[in-house]
Structures are given as structure tokens and as C-alpha cells.
Image (cartoon, rainbow, N blue to C red; front, side):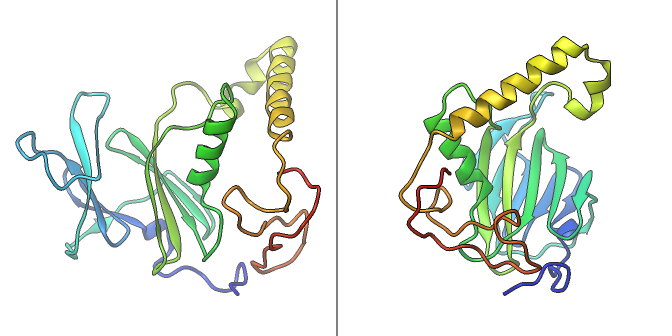
Length: 210
């Protein structure tokens, strides 16, 4: 088992994405994001337009091009990092076998709880070799609460708190015969099992809510 804080990812999480051209990035080992050729409509996992109307594509590659460092705008130690380029948010998280993927949880909420806002996932994959997952997300418009909370009135803050509490109440109505993730994996949560290593509680019969 991987013990947090002792076995770091290699390469480091902040090196998961690198730049290989003016409008071209190497994402993990086997994916490239680049400005698309309008005449080439093949070999793309996903395509989208950025805010300037430029088309980008995501494709796989076997090449190992020369690259330069490309720092994330946010890094959570050695377990997660965020980048923004090509009009999207790119999230990389450390991952182990049978660990719940965030994109699958988002899809579950989107499918079962209409009205609860979730990010739009463009594409995601899991790299078992480097023990990390990748997720491409739409950039949501608006302000983060930490940047505007102090400027809100008490009634506005109360309304937001009530809205979030309402989402939690709705999510709590989803039940399963076993205590498990939405994909049937064991639950890894330090509030249930405090520890220093990844050691999920495997699905067991219970009346617990998800």
C-alpha cells in the first residue's frame, strides 16, 4: 500500500503536463493537446473551441517529444494539480487501483440528481503506470466563494449555505446495500478510518447512505 507523505509520485504531480510547442502540450505520457488543423479531422479523442474561437484537439501519441516545464496554477502537495490552457481546466490527481475516479462520481450526480450543478467533463482517463488520473473540464464562469464571500451580505451568505445544504440532503437520499463508492469500490475516507496510508474500507453490507 502507498503511505501518504512517504512514497511520492514519479514524475512529480506538477510535472504531469509539459509544453512542447507554442500551442501544444504533452499531457501525461500518451496524450497531446494542440491547436487543430482545420483540414485534418482524424485522430482526435475530443475537439472544442476556446473563447477566441480557435479549435483545439486531444489525441494520443507514442512519441516522446522534447518538452519544457509548464507550472500548474494550483498544486495540492504531491496528490493533485490544476492547469488552465486551450480554454479548459486540466486536473491531475494521484490514483491507485480500485480508487474511485472523480469523473465517474460527477457523472453519477449528473445522471441521478438533476439540478445539482457539477462541472462539465470533456474527457478523462487513468494512467496506471504513473499512478495518476487526468480530467479535462470546462471552465465554469463566475467567482469562487473564497474571493467574494466577504463582500456578500448576511442574507446572501445564508441563501448560499441553505442551497448547499439542500444539495447535501438530496445526495443523502441515495442508498445502496453496501458501503461503497458509486463504482462499487471501497471507501477511502479518513473520517471513517483515520490512518496514514491508503487502506479503503471495502464494500460491506450496511444501511449507510452514500
